[in-house]
Image 1 (tube, one colour):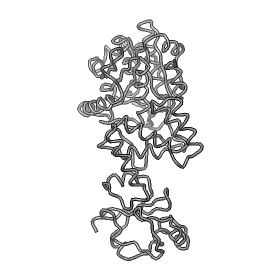
Image 2 (image 1 turned 90 degrees about the vertical axis):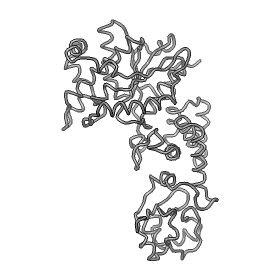
Image 3 (image 1 turned 135 degrees about the vertical axis):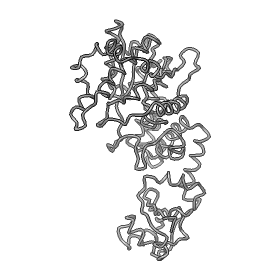
Length: 428
């Protein structure tokens, strides 16, 4: 049977780890934790790899702990940041913690008989420390030289912004978290992205110095897309797990639009599909990339995990209708259509622009879908141009106010992939 260590290695989720962790996974039930920064009331797709780390750990019989940083959230983690975060009030943090708790419950089993998941708030201990006591009991075990060697601190020292004493102390707070979890739950492993390695090793050192015991760390690579962009960002902004911030349809579309170069890695990172299933999808991507079978499976799996089966089926049906060439104009909420087209280039127009009666060939040229009027004419004649999902065959066709869909937009398309959105000012 595959061990958790072997599983993580196959999925490409081991960047650095402490010596002996593989044996610990094989021989004992490990209790591990990951921290979640409560800077918002919702998690986002950038945190999914972290969430799946805990969920995968639990599925292999180990015990997961999620720390929601109600205490450290009042300070802010400098790791991976070039400027200091805006500090939140205690009320804001409490609200954010409540939202994150609910989302984690979709991935972790808090009622498992042998290895139930736990959610803890580090404000339970950090908020009760007095400054002198914390400096005496924790701070004295770390030299300034040691802290300056940490990559997250060094990067900030090299920046114009510098680093405040507040954020400089973050490493000590996270180290104390590890010690507290070791004492309370015999937690011997902290996991996270590579930017957390310095914080994790500080906790390991504190446990060794104060308790004389060995603890472990494991980090996985930080994600970027094959095009070099930061994972989880679109032109429309962050992709949230909260359906009020990012609709299930837009969430589904985000994964459906995954680049062929990334999709197999994402199936390994973000799903529970086994080697055979992912191997078959990898083969399908090589032989029939135009079918985008791997992307469809990825989008279904992730939307189901985050939003449930019903919302997933709704997103699939809406997607099929929006992009079908046989159903004509859409019958979906305008918000869903806008979400599906959030990465498409767009132009703002007025109703007066449309009332002027410009031919479609001019619009195609102006938006860049055609390089010239003659090419636009050729595309129309060949059946390659669509207005609001309806094919156009009349090369003399004009765009008018009658083409404005739900008083909001007109979608021009060349073939299946090239789209341009005309956003119509509804106040005209």
